[in-house]
Image: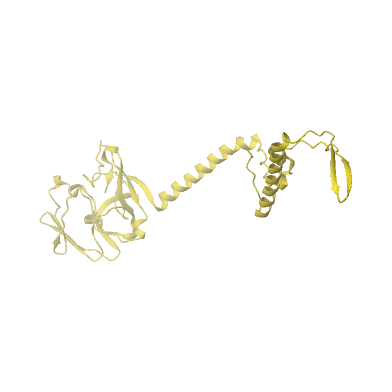
Length: 273
């Protein structure tokens, strides 16, 4: 019935509400008793005051103004006293025309910055260029080489673990077409790594390696190597076709780019490492 009124303060709201309610109540009272009133016709009344009688002639009451309804009452109050907030000005069409392109450019710029930041500091995609990690990672000639994601952040938070598949820069002096290699961590700093009886040994303990390519029938013998501090002994899962630490020695931890953790392509081979 009465439109909603926004008020600025509690005192103004109470005062405004009291004025409106009083006016509405008065209007309803007038309407209710309009038909019950007697017509304004001349009449003679007598009033007895002590011993004298005074003759009074009734006079017709002055015409009353027509009552105002609720809407007229509200409209009669100035907008600033009603506490109404004026509507915001209409924006020009030119601003609307340029708003969407600007937002799109900002979104593209933020996306590009996030992509660059993620690739530089968190996650980077790589592809497998060789067969040295078969069958864990496909990189054979004529097949659809695996694409994977490499975590560049985790080794800033914890140490390198045995069994991690790591991506690292090519060791100096190694003749290889690829600038970045991928192998599995076998020996940690301070450990002695050797190969005999078809297995890899850490000190006097043989490693259980279910990931080694079965076509290689284990690992060929190699002399014991003590891994220097800050370095890691890495080997490919395809032991019979892998150029690794048996040839170029243990790699420094500073050359490790990150840990491979997920194959993302082809879709048929998507899985965690």
